Length: 133
Image 1 (cartoon, rainbow, N blue to C red):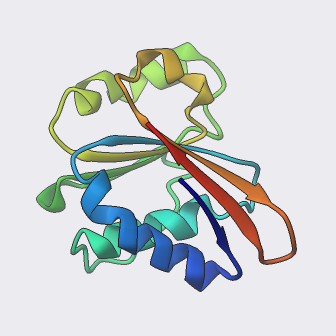
Image 2 (image 1 turned 30 degrees about the vertical axis):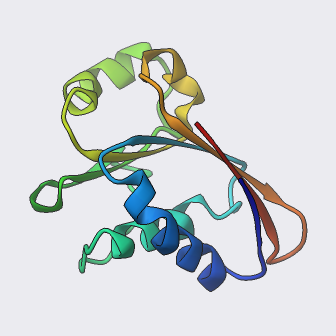
């Protein structure tokens, strides 16, 4: 599936719309900085019924929303496999939960059948978003 969004709000609405299909799945989000991954995840969380504010976990790596069975993972600052191992990600990946992972390139070989979503900037606010898996 391929989508084009024209604003951050539209990217959030797309995440919200796709949430039922992504529930209890591991989602690998690919794309450069500012491509819309976090906006999509905010919409995804809203579509899953999460009322809390969704912030990027760039500096803490993982934001768990355990009551909602949702994890937001950002591996941008992970420098090596030892950093990733210390996170306890293997345990999280074994749970039946919705796990959204930004910068999954660093662990893609550890993911079992993830939904892959690719974000591409094609304009200042326009994004091409491709979903596979």
